[in-house]
Figure 1 (cartoon, rainbow, N blue to C red):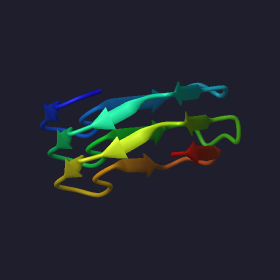
Figure 2 (cartoon, one colour):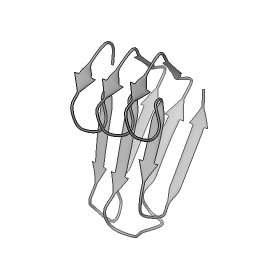
Figure 3 (cartoon, one colour):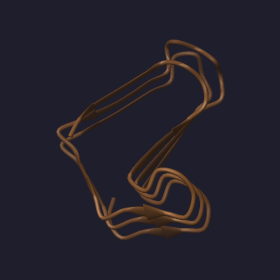
Figure 4 (cartoon, rainbow, N blue to C red):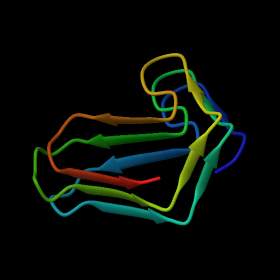
Length: 88
């Protein structure tokens, strides 16, 4: 995801996990030069069900040059429980 501006959250990627087995895997990606008026300029992940099966995985990804007016210029993970794994 490159050079995207969004008034809300998740300028580059917005992940809305609303299932018990919600999974998002990004591999070999570049999340670059995005901005958000809310949180998560590069990536925003929201889990709306409190479950340990919600998984966000970033593997061999580059997150650079992103900004947010709120929290997490690069990555912001909001609410719920589960697993977030990053290999940047």
